[in-house]
Length: 258
Length: 106
Image (tube, rainbow over all chains, first blue to last red; front, side, top):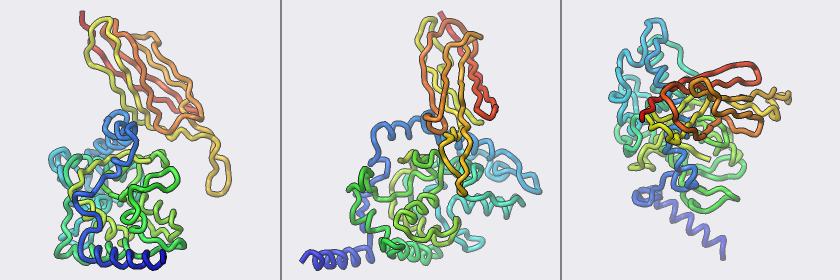
């Protein structure tokens, strides 16, 4: 009896997410609401939040010339405090010039190669994390709102397909934890909705700041699936789907997570 | 090494003030191994001290048990205008320091 019920439930869940949101907009919860009070306070306290070390470094790098032409981010964008305000709420986004879907990290690297004649920064390098967090934090408190129409549509659909696709030896999709079982526990850990609004985030497990892709890789490793290389288009598509799923959640970057 | 310090810019004489500092450091424990099984040498900030107008008001001996990017907080009494000077050194001899001034009135 029981397995049959599960199958029926799965079939219903399947049709629900094919049309709309598996987690209704008024049910969307940031990962910080699953944290202890101490960690939430740590995230909100700009001195105790260790990620602010990277943010400060990012503010410095923003003005540092790089590449052949000796230009810095500030040469074009002036003060990030004004020019980058709200930008993180719109990413990932399709670059109109190239038609490629870019997340913030990829956007920064594209700026470096296209406009600064500088080498792209390595994923998870301190420099790229610092700059990303410097850009992202200018949108702190602003609601996520990504475009999924037009050129982004195909990426969005690919991201959604990846999300609901079973992966790895455990044969789990993202939805098995983050839609069917959120607010339950996996041993001592709360299962969250897997919302991306705090990244780049300082994870206590990592003892350092990490990107959303690093977090996605940690999930893939947890379900014993193949980890794709950093910067893979699959991650970008998935990040777009995740951002759409989190629509309306305030940007918390840089967050603190367990 | 990036460090961030927070002290009040102004205080009344005799006031108890909060001093906070966070330092970017991996605080390598000495218990971890790399990908090929070699032990990673311990490298932690082993001492941090804070001088207030030249006199030491706080000192901490840190070791392997302290998490990366250590955060320290303590209290002291504001008795005269001047400068807080933090300095620290890790096992490899790398040094760091930070200064903050405070104006004390009354």
